[in-house]
Image 1 (cartoon, rainbow, N blue to C red):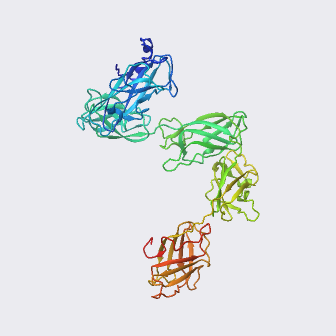
Image 2 (cartoon, one colour):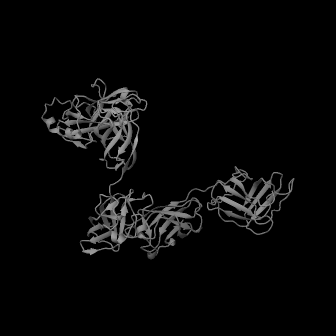
Image 3 (cartoon, rainbow, N blue to C red):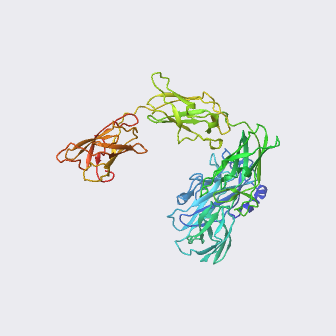
Length: 632
């Protein structure tokens, strides 16, 4: 039994299926009747095509996807009797099937008695497939047991043609651009187009199009929906290889919309149909109108945190906050309107728009649009401190909150609003000195974020448990709805175990050799790269011992000045690279030959430590030879 039908004509069969004679049910409460299928396909190696088959539910039980009454289209062997099995020749064509032996379940969530169920699945021709016709046999089974609900059988064929024989050659597309929603009528011109024994298959980026007309030099097709961007269009004659490809560009011509809103405190959260950004962030007062309908008052919008567009318009958001001059009382019925403006509407489908809001393709948002909601209390209640952390030897503490927060200077915020206490009277606890540059706690309501990162007055010791407490005034730290962090909020954290691993020198490079060939003149310099972050303090207590190949030795003293062996020593921003530059002339203890010859070794350091207080292991360093070659 086999019929070629469209989805529309298949749907028209549902009533006639119920009036047809129904054989005995194979599974109590379940029965079906074949109602048609999509056309056989021609396919090329590596190409994917789609099959659809329609069955009417002629039983008394609704087919419900994801439940015990789900009905599947099972694969069957060539005998059309043995199902829940697949022939080896077609097994490798699986392209997203339910399993190796089940093609699909209904595309509909439920298929009631008397309705048609649609079963849709893809087949992908292996890249090494040989020419021939490949048959996909199937029948309906109860998903949970695999029992056939009405042994009937159906099949669909995919034909692979010979390599290159009879392939069409394409020369042009008209038009070459269409909407990403699909539905664009495209005329494909070329030679060698074969309309018999069946219309050729037309693919847009691997998705099959509906072929509307066919002639020896042109094919008419309707583009399927596709994500925006360029795709390759091919035409495949029946039983032949695909044609050459031509480029067709899908354009996003769908305007974004403002679809929903909610209100709490002085924050209106708006929702967009797709990510949008703003090309003008200063027009919030005229972009939006927010009315307390219950109180018959207008509440001015003071800011809108929809982001300013990047050049690529790739930073859009689907939700944003509008901030009002006054909070809305809970229960108030509120209307928030996105107003149209006089700017040019990029999307021709718009009759009016707000040109300040665009999607990633530059389409302007539909406007005017209005949404309503009842104001609620602030969701989530008051913010709380959820955790804190600090690294051993580090000088920052990271504080995480249950909600995004902002640090309100007008409300008295200062770094000292938080304290650390290790509950040990014999130690001095670090204090907080400033908000770190990496902190996400903004200075305004619209720049709220988390975490808050604070700088400490001293490095954090190892294996120490601290209680971090908020002791600041009410209103110093608030969530985005202006609800205060409660005074006395606290959390404990423990720093890591002590670090006893000494740093090493991993790279020693000569930087400058300004006069003689020896290392001895003011301005001569070298750089040492350490394996980990070091303590940044540099003073005359820092000394570096060096020795050349003939035994000449010297000790360099940091701190600058013109004295013999004096040098300026400076760390880079990572505090891992120390650059040593002679400021005085080097006086060395001569070995076999006077003068500090290059290359020379670093033999010792004094006064340098990693953040845990470990001195470097110089003799165990992988590279301590200062030489001309970069990276020596």
